Every structure is written in structure tokens, then in C-alpha cells.
Length: 270
Image 1 (cartoon, helix red, strand yellow):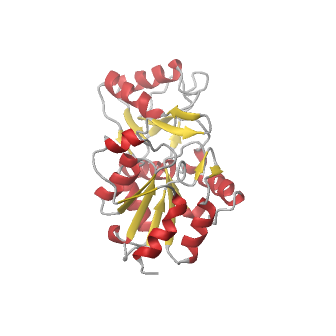
Image 2 (tube, helix red, strand yellow):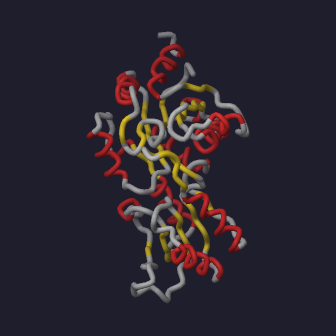
Image 3 (cartoon, helix red, strand yellow):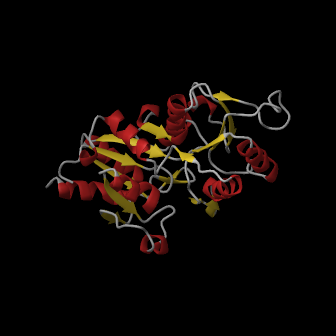
């Protein structure tokens, strides 16, 4: 902890719930910024672009801009360019994220557009919502049967909103994988490449970074597997039973993000 130079922070469930700041989160991030530590907000959120997220957070008082934010869609665009260059893609996602999918060729796969009869090379799955109905899932299943690859931004089964826990795309992804006898290529957390991209942006090594999240597996333990110090917060999607059943133990557990500055000060001997 004494060597920490940067902090990676999940957004949903750590800083906010349904985009409303959690108690003490704004002041905690301001203190971390004032201490001179690098900051990257790393999120599997797929319903908004980086610019939209930054505007919402800044409007709530968080000291951030779009350059501080790394989203699963942005990482997915880079992944597709590297692993599937020139691929024709169909996107199953709730929310308009085209702005962050720079360079990705997206087909109109709504069943009414000009690309209806074109078989995509890749089916890209983002975050779940009303768009994940039978017709859309069945079209994706058909593309996979005809040889399309499956790329998913994450495997999250659920997330917390102001209405409680809600199903996410990981629940549907499992069905597509089983039905089509394929395995998705994951681009967001917990993929190691996601954390490596964040570290590269901050110019630090794994041993110089700390990851704060509410998902013990995808946020915290996944970061620890790459050599990053993991901090689990008991907000957002945190559940005691998930903590007990996890595949490992976090390096640190805090009641909330508001407690992080005190942990960092103690580690630095302040």
C-alpha cells in the first residue's frame, strides 16, 4: 500500500447508485485527487458514453472528465480492431454507445433495416435492458449458429439500481453460449486486458495501483490476479453471501468508498 501511485475505481455501486452519489463519495474522490494520486474510473457500464458519464459525474460534484473514464465499450472497440479487424458487427445493448465504438462497423440488426439479410462476423453483447427480448436474442442465436463470433463486454449477472438488484446481460450470455455451443470473448472486467489498459493509461505498474469495487469477483479478485491491490466496498451490489462464497479474499474491505482516504493515509503514514 505504501507504494500506491494510482487508484482504479468502479463507478456504479462504488461512487454512485442510479447515478446518484453515495454518501461521502464526492469528498473522498476530491481528497484522493488532492493527494496527487492518479485516478481512473473503470466501469462495465454500457448504457452511456464516456462523455455522458463524465458530464453526469461532474454535475454531481465529482472532479472528473471524460479522459479519466475507461468503459467496456471503449475497450471493446480497441479489442475488435486488434482481434477482428474489419469485422461486420451486430450490437445487442441497452443504450446508445456508438460514440465509444470508434472504427467498429455496426450492422442494422433490428429486423427492419437494410442489413437484415447480412450475416455479421461478430455478435457484440453489451448491457441488458428492454432490448434483450426474445426476437433480439433469437436473432443473435441465429447469427452464432451461422458462424459469427461472440464478444461480450462483461459477464455481470446483475447490478444495483434505486429499485434494487436488476438482471444484467451475463444471465442472457450464459444461455447464448450454451445454446450455440460457443464461448464469449470478454473485453471488460474481469478480463486482464481491461486492467492492463487502465494501468498503461496511468503509467503505473500493477504493484503501484489499487482497485476499488463492489463486485468481489469481477472488480476486486480479478484485479488482484493481475497484481493490483484489491479493495472491496460494502455498497452497491455487495452481498455478504457473495463475499463468503467468493473464490478468494480481498486485500482490504471497507464499508464504503468514503473510507478510502483514511486507508491510504494510514498506509502512507500520514
